[in-house]
Image (cartoon, rainbow, N blue to C red; front, side, top):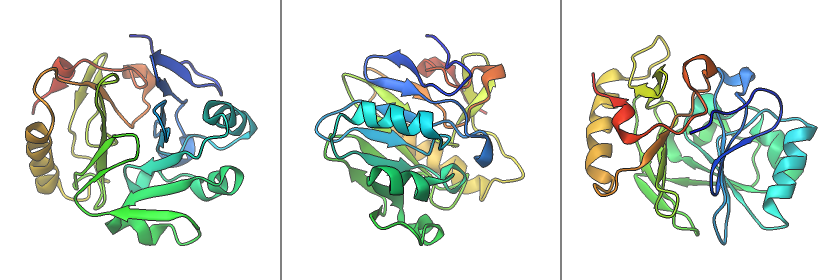
Length: 212
């Protein structure tokens, strides 16, 4: 699949899935747009500028959309984005305290399904409230936040870093995730880390998940 271009504009990777450029104010997090009905979803916060806001207004076509935040490092300037767009924000409950300025903030505990059928799972480890977003068919993509990050081109790996909240819990989250996802067909993978030099912004095939 194609990789996300540099610059201010998102890049379409397949029908209904777009990757935004890395957000450099939050450790190069990568944001994704999922075109789904009746409630499109923006996964994590892209760079907030006039180009992004214009693009998101075009994508939404007047619909009420939702922002899902997969971990505390992907919040960016989400409060400014909400002021511009008025969309609600969904976050795992352990990281809601980090967003006191948001007006439309919703939380979930272990699992959640959106109005459009996207499925969320709490996967602590990278941060206390990390989660993943699974978009079933016709997309069949797992948006994995920082649980899996680019390692080599078309490869993702779980990696312990100096910012990892709890490595043992992350390993348990990976086991839980494998059991939770459908086995046939296995989804493509979309990392929330935007390292373009090693394929950040690509959709990676399931076989590109490299086990430790």
